[in-house]
Image (tube, rainbow, N blue to C red):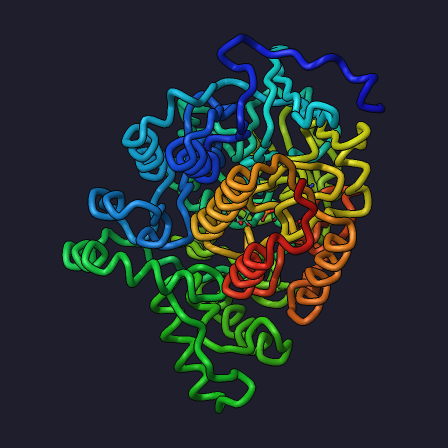
Length: 546
Ligand code: NAP
């Protein structure tokens, strides 16, 4: 639709007129971006948030066992020293309720909520070239007008509920883990069927099994998992965090994935088998995502990866007592960490419980749901509750469910019909003044999220400051810079084992009909940070400023 055919710019009220910036989403990203633009640059800013409170992904993902896989001392903001002094985490990995308390603490401390409209879902955002403004519409028909539009919508916030015939007639209850009821779900005395064995299902299964009468897990693709070894944080370690917060922050800025651990330099393929085994044993005992750091070549050399994969498969077979179940769980078809590697608390041990069963969907897929059962092509499994731990329309889903139109009414969904295209994961040519925080094409989900978020929000803030200081009011990615970046994203991914996981959400392969494109930037956060800094230093190279 050409610009002049669009409805005239309307605003919700005088107070909302002429916002400098509008942010969509009040999770980690939206909260910090609001602080940056409002308190550092003094702009008029609003956040529109679909949920009833702050938290983003954590607001919705309240499923049993929901916990972060990044360790708590790196899963926080580092922009204000007082935050790191005042907040204390209680466990090695923060659980969902504690993360919610933390984000509320931050929002209250900086009085952020007064500029957030909750229960407000954005349905469209259209750019008007003549006015150089974005017109943003909410589900309830309210309209906002803004110069800069920043999406902080998260990468994993559009729930994927598979279209299974018969679900609407199921007479029990069903839930998606990413849209979990705030009051929780009572599993006592219930037969539960849980579909999905990604990070979510692997966290949820042991907790559900502990209270349900029976749990049947429906597994399509077998998955690796390493023990999380969660535990309360010792008082000495809490003290250490307080005293070394700056050093810890510095390390997260130097590592590939924004974590506080460094990947070892040694190569698995050059390490003797016995020594390798000792190293993997120690990594297994230590637990957590750091398992991936045992060898430098784990994600770049399939032979090296095979050694890690075989180690974990052997562990699975040693934990799970029933050999048929162990065989299904360890029959894994992709390299370790080519899909996002889960970590767990007693996941494989859960299959030793008498009230837990595993169904292999590769042998017999789900055909339908009846009024009382999940039915595969081979058998019917009576259940009272179905839990969909079936993941998300990741990265592009949260953006494309908003009708985003750039110059001349061109829709983002059309520009991205063959997969996401942008420059630095930050901007799309033809969509001036629109910034995407941790969008596809940036390290995002391959990085510890708060680290990636702070880098993006800081870069966007500096960019807007630069425009304002220079009397400029428009920035837009150049098409040729976008093409080059898309090629770079593909090139770095092709040098890793990531594309070898055919069913990965990194590739969009979990959503029927979604283009298969490796979406995050796999070149590492350090390199990415450097590229973004150089682009800015070189006068925002690759962007047109006017
Ligand atoms: P996911 O990794 O996409 O896993 C979804 C699971 O559902 C997979 O086992 C998938 O099988 C299965 N599935 C999907 N559609 C299905 C269908 N139609 N029939 C049968 N099975 C189906 O989703 P997730 O576990 O929610 O995790 C998504 C991401 O969220 C994670 O990778 C992680 O980045 C993040 N996350 C983080 C944490 C944390 O930090 N603690 C916790 C949870 C999630 P296939 O593999 O065959 O597709």
